[in-house]
Image (tube, helix red, strand yellow):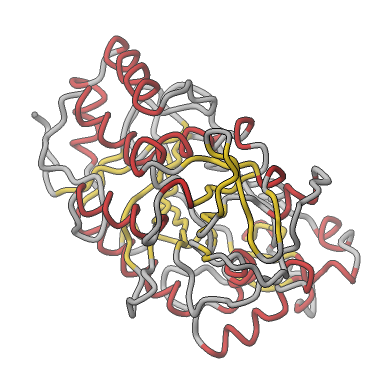
Amino acid sequence: MLPRAQEYYARQQFSDEKYRRFLSQLHESIGMPIEFRVSEMPVFVSNEFRRSLELAAVDILRQCVSPEYRRQSEATLEERYTVPNEADHPLFAVVDFAVAESDEGLQPKLIELQGFPSLFGYQYYFAKTSKEVFGLDPSYAITLGGIGESEYIDLVRTSILGTHDPEEVALLEYQPEHQKTRPDFLALRTLIGIEETDICSVKKEGNRLYHQRKGRWVPIKRIFNRAIIDELDDQGAVLPFHWRDDLDVEWAGHPNWYFRISKFALPYLRGSAVPDTHFVSDLENIPDDLHRYVLKPLYSFAGKGVNVAPTSADIAAIPPEQASQWVLMEKVQYAEYIYTPEGMNKAEIRVLLIWPEDSDTPMPVMSLIRTGRGPMMGVRYNSVPWSGSSGGLFGDKDRAEG
């Protein structure tokens, strides 16, 4: 990491006036105010640590497409949610790492993962605007994998739109105007021209779907799905199609991978970045040292349901038929390494990956960082100054002067 650059930024390059201007410019670039808390700072990351993140993310994702794991993850696919014509690998995926302490120094430790897209548009504007408004060294990269900004935009455009006109591609979400992730939807509209579509508003005729564009029903040829099955169920949403329908449509990210690449994968993964994890249903005995573990439900998002201090009673209270839906995961020791005027922060770094359909390997392309001083790093748990949603700037210039 780059601790001197981080401290120099906080002490010399930051000001309240610049922060207000940063938020104003970010809101203007995206087209709406941002409801979640935006941190006062980007996080400065060394190229060495960036490479560690990239290698770990790629290795983990490749494990998730192995024939053995694909057989194991068949258990995640309920018939009513299983979409035909599954792709050989996910088009989009994210891997969340804690910046953790170890005997060898700082290292990435897996927290969770998703075979699902993240904030590819918003994070681009966060990092770009940070560099511009705070006058940061232009040599810092805002992308991963050694790609430039224009290459990043082209890759996002091609991955989401394919060969189609943006009018024929649906960014599909449930009531998108009410989602906290809407800043990303609007950022993608600016970046590549795609518009959001409420999943309940589409029309089905035969095996084709249609959405309205400028008062016309336009055939949907490709779907960039952002709708979360859990939320659709919780809200009792009535869809005009069934997930198991054999639709005449391309999926920009096949929905089945949302289930396959999830916390379900954690007990099957191996590597120095992977904490020891077990399904509760596989435990012969409840560990005596539960203080070393975190209890997580398999299917939840934004940290909902995570128990960072489980007790034997908490585990015993899980009904036997639900025990396979929970994992007990070795607790990660977050490093308090990010200087802020309010104290030292911890961080989780999300690696956003794109795996093109004709490629042998996934590509790390962008970061999302959550930072704070509490026990959990989600934005909902960090609403005090110098915490919240952030992004990475990557380079080798760790210095105490501009």
